[in-house]
Length: 263
Image 1 (cartoon, one colour):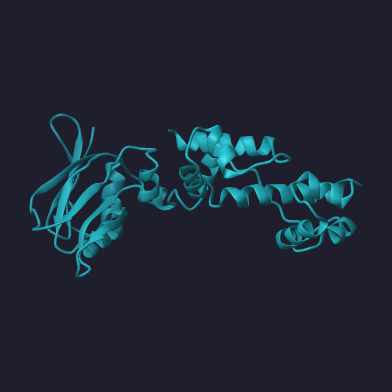
Image 2 (cartoon, rainbow, N blue to C red):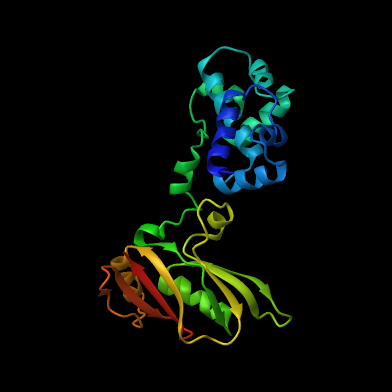
């Protein structure tokens, strides 16, 4: 399932039906997903829950109608799903910081919650890392197995020297990491299967002091500059190979070699 497209479809459905009954079960059914997965992915992609989005959009539109038209406040409250004037006033005041009656009188000072575009939200939000542009390179293909005795230290190295992301998924009884992953994209993005896995699987074990990964990248010059800027000098100069591609090697904190190439 393309979650970006599906969640955007749900958002557009919400916008067309803000005056109707809406809940996670109804929206999940519209895109043929389970309610649990739908709510989880909605929150990841939109930085708010389904309920928060619906409520905030309704209160935004209700505020606009209150200051723009003479429709009774109770009728506006009922229109947007509130059964009593009291419940609407409480919700309206929490969102806008002013009561509906004062908003109508002052005709100013209201908050807004905009219609979300998922792709725009991703590019500027918390999920898509802002340091993509600073890092300047993208890993296109990998999937190596990497052994390390100190997974926390190794993941820290990948973050600081290569600008990657990492997490430890399993630890032993002493709290030592025994399985984890590092990836050049955030774990949340990889979990959504928006892109194929391009990270490295980590296991606790004796370090393999040899080449453990041969990775296709886009922007090898930027990779070289990024590693050098981090203060890590164990990277070879970029070499143009006889077959026309460019390569360089990075020796990790464990003594393993990551070889990068760009056609």
